[in-house]
Length: 231
Image 1: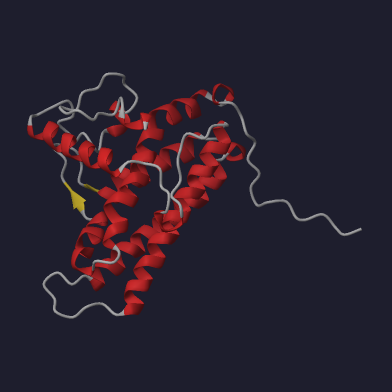
Image 2: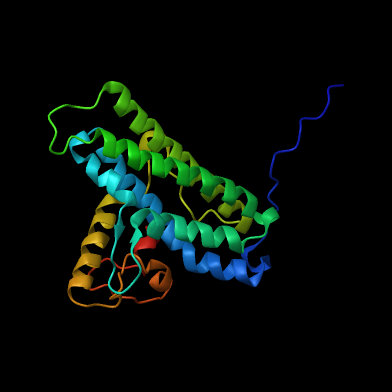
């Protein structure tokens, strides 16, 4: 008889959400909307730009620091992706997905930083020369590596909570079930809310984790965080 296959590097022990430690339960309830919104952003804000070097500056901007009201200057990468991923990773026991989340987080961060660097190097804004086919392929490959890391993080979190709430990103975004129309409207409503001095003066988008699970939150528009995740 052949020998048994080696065990996986990490074995997640699936638990019902209410069986997890209180810290993990609280972090999950507060931050899962931020993660799904990050995946939506990775698809709807970045994927369509991969074939358009004239707009690669928008990809490069992922790691640029920005001021949000009185808050500290942080990049969109840090604010919208890494912070919620880190908090969840630190909140979950290693055998309930924490180890796999850490691995996925490390890989995603490396991919995102490289993606931003490659995009800045190859962007054609103000330039005449187009990036080479190899440079375009490298940007696409790096974006896809980030996609796979997001999916790995989602898989670990879904398994660790015995849920299927988080929706991963398919290869080439084919069949991604989330609505770009709703996402675009949410972005517009968030900007409108900021301009009106609405509920999150420090940045509605950046403070998703504060408002994401509060029923009836009105971001000064028709699409809000109370209904966006019902799609």
